[in-house]
Each structure stands twice: as structure tokens, then as C-alpha cells.
Image (cartoon, rainbow, N blue to C red; front, side):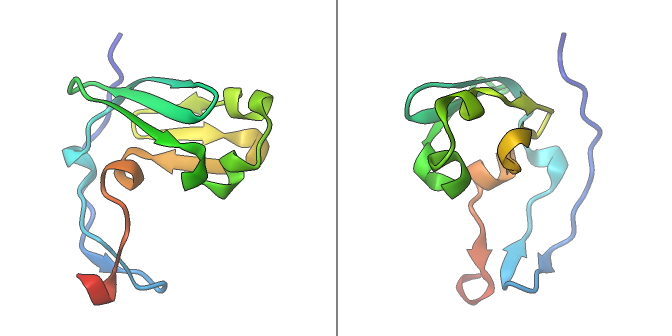
Length: 103
């Protein structure tokens, strides 16, 4: 069963921390599967891509126990680790934040 996501358009916004957000939600691929190994988080996307990133990208994941890292859920665009209060979105992995000065 495919995940259904409703398109949402975000306007270009400069946030108080100086980060520019220009990505539209309907341009993002949907998460199909997620798993965690000893060093990385992996996700398969509905467009066929598989992406992995190290725990060091998130201090919360880097400092979590193996059991805490394995206890996650995911939606169309986000992975949630409720035990450690961490959320990582497809947008953040594919399009890391840019500072306004760099935009």
C-alpha cells in the first residue's frame, strides 16, 4: 500500500535563524521504508532512491542507545524518534538548510 500525501506549497521564507526555506512539499519524494543499522539511518523513497546518513548528523541520534535508535516511526515525509525527541525530514536530508547569507 502506497503512502498518500497531499501536496502543500511552502513559500520562500527567511526564518529567524537566517535559514532560507524554498522547497515545496509536493516536490519531495515520499518515504517508502526506513531502517537503522549500527552506524546509519537508511530510507528508501518512492522515486527509487535509497539514502543513508550517519548518526553524527544528529547529536540526539549519536548519543542515543542502539535500542532508542531502533524505536522509530515514519510518515510520508518524516522519521520520528519519540524516545529522544528527534524528527528528521526528507527535506532536511535532501536539501540541507542554507543560511540567508549563502542564498
